[in-house]
Image 1 (tube, rainbow, N blue to C red):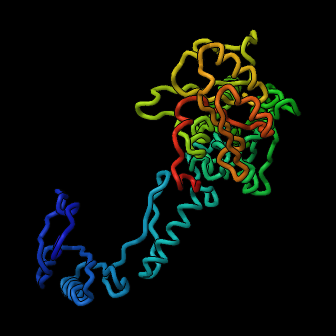
Image 2 (spheres, rainbow, N blue to C red):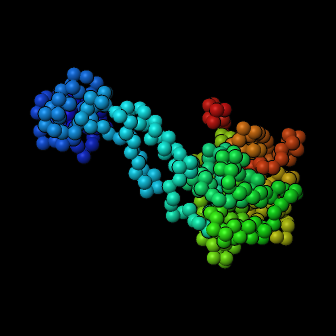
Image 3 (cartoon, helix red, strand yellow):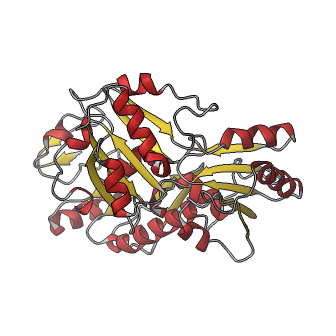
Length: 364
């Protein structure tokens, strides 16, 4: 590398031979490829001229068509290497490169891969609500599905993007409303996959966090149906984060626990040790707990949690309809009812909720 001056970062590189001086004729002796990337057009012209005399490939950064070679805008994706040339128009090739990469990620352009299983099932976590928070892999597999079996919680925009030939099956489990029994869901996954379809089971959040995902894995495995699992961004962490609250913070809490509130304290099928939970000093994240919030608050207060423990309630987290409510543990039930908070909602209990908001965080 030849340059009249260099940055400390370049100077620290040990993979290059560096000459800190101006270019002079003869510097390309022994080279087979050169890049003229100075801010002086006259120097770039001289470098290209020497390259032409010596039959050397030379890229000219400022005027690509004046060089003897052009570097493609390139990227790698899922085992593919893609390069784009646009007649020396660097910005155009870069824009097209980015469009192709996005199309591959979204499944608009399909590159058949080993995780797209004809006659198989993919359990895909749809994330906490914002359609942009699904993983790249999850979105790609969703775009290549023949059948999508979807819950209520995944972002509806993801379903709206599907091609018209895709069969979408509503497996919504709306609390206290219509529901599709788990056995029926398992049967649909198996039947559609056995018909040779690639089936995506789309769930909100992460498929293995209170989503019965592993029950579906076991059912498919028992039926001989291959399954791949695509983790998702769980609402238990993402929703508080988007509301400006971390579930852990150095010197404040070294633990957090995520608890399902679908069963009340004292229910014979509940596996939660509420006394132990109340004794923790860390963060508690309650999912599916709004309908029984009075019971959960009561058991935590009786177990030793202080009445003034800060609480954050977030409804429709990470979406345009997001609403937040701050309270103390003691007055949370009253405030939740007064605000008309309904599922889906996340309840965060702990000192981290008391952290002062940072202006501008998540457009706050």
